[in-house]
Length: 293
Image 1: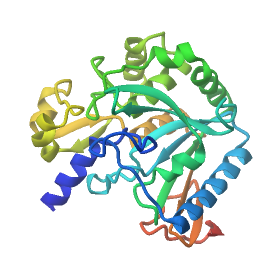
Image 2: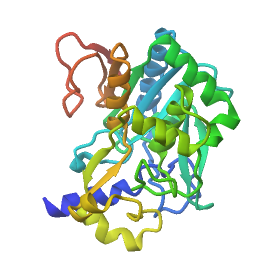
Image 3: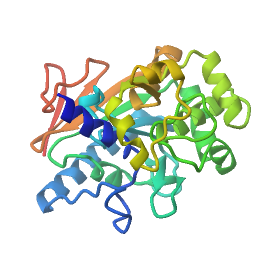
Image 4: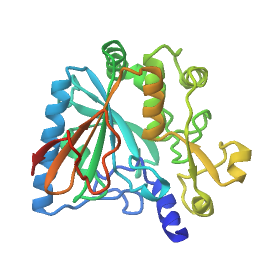
């Protein structure tokens, strides 16, 4: 429905805005205020997530969250980062890019798993996707992510939710992660080298119907279409990096990578390994692992 697409398209503008800084303007962040029961369930969900990460034996795991609701754009996941076993903040804290609203710039930010899951768009239902990389790829990503100079070398402070992945003028949160991965897996230093490496490796961004958002763009300072290719833009299509396009790229490059999806519906946690996406409502299927909340 057109009005629902308009709302979902507008939500794309907020996909990297943090809800962890309550002082940030309400028009920029989407603060989640779960009640005591919801808060307790989300923390227990985070504990299940942490235990599965620990069991992986990996040093770095790609993690995506159903933060901003992009359902009407055909996307479940809006925000991705890398969970690091040896993160200085805490084991398995997520290193990611956020748009700092007060500063009007992007920053690399570490967030513990409790905060990461508290940023769900819906406290009654939330989804996390994990991508377990081959050991060599995970180790290289961990080294690069924990190297401050390397992580910042692919950071662009100018934020744009609709950033085109092969444009150097701005960046969204998922694009920073993608360029960090490129740097870890063989790209030369700098954003230009990372983007050239991604193009040569066959990376394909998500194609999103955002005709409604184009009309809103003049009124939202962190949404710009200037870098988008002209012909798709005229057709109402924007090409952006989202968790789905990152996962597709990684699975193409490393077919042996293992994908897990974990969700909760307020009653139980559902864990699925290497299967189709879990149905809306976090409905389990035979073979899924269930943990009551």
